[in-house]
Image 1 (cartoon, helix red, strand yellow):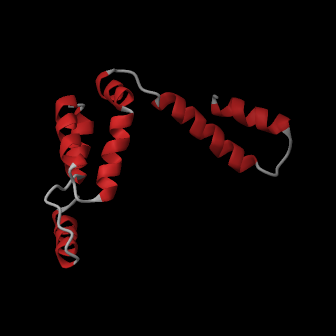
Image 2 (cartoon, one colour):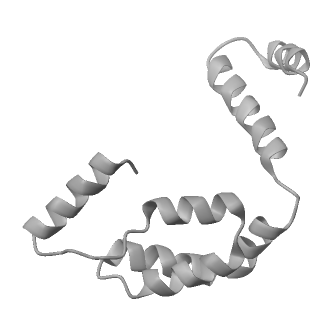
Length: 114
């Protein structure tokens, strides 16, 4: 989050009496981008003490699925290619809705390389 947006958030929090010194936005992005598991654990401890309910809920949901989160940060595998193929198929399905039958769909799929 940029400096202007962060200052507006702080200003709004102060105006409504809900200032929370823990601001999670940029930190969690950096932690996940670097795959830093120790920093993530520290961030989750801070987030669980936040006065903001959505932040506490987000931290709780990450902790409930901690094994998957740690695997995503530490292992070299990704389901990105699979998600890409699914996205292509869904796009094609939306484009083909209400048009000619299965034969045209089959030709379009083969042309896409799916």
